[in-house]
Length: 183
Image (cartoon, rainbow, N blue to C red; front, side, top):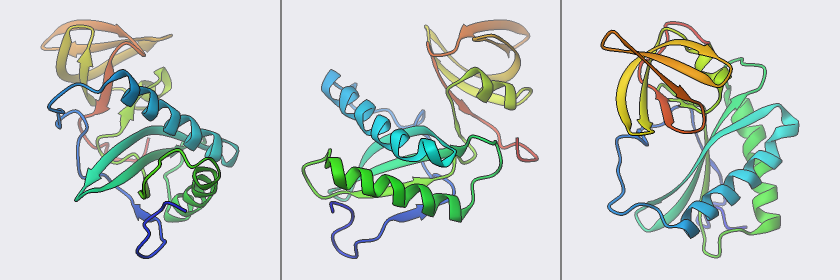
């Protein structure tokens, strides 16, 4: 097993501390890094899909020299992610990562709930957060604005009184404010 060789455990957190939109790499990821990340996401999704979870995001991080595979999940039934959910998903993914061994060196596998700055990847993600602010980057745009409407794969934002409509999948979106209740 490549997970945390020191204590052979998987770390669990219920919220993330870094905003992937605030941390800009010194150089853009290479095509091979993107492909590797997509491969890790596919492995994680295959491991947890049948359990009723959706992988929102997989990030490779390097904290103090040890690689960390950070997996953010949500429940397909749109209920809050619990510690039990994180444990269940982590154990399933850990078995699949061990079987496939996608990373040559030792690494730590961590699972988190979406958190306050959750990734918004699908039209349904935006629908659930209507009226809340999202941070958007892509298609020549970079702004934080309320989600005004969703029609099909088109998401409209109210950017300083002007409607800006973008197509899901062509930009990166993250929640920019925490909702007052679970959505």
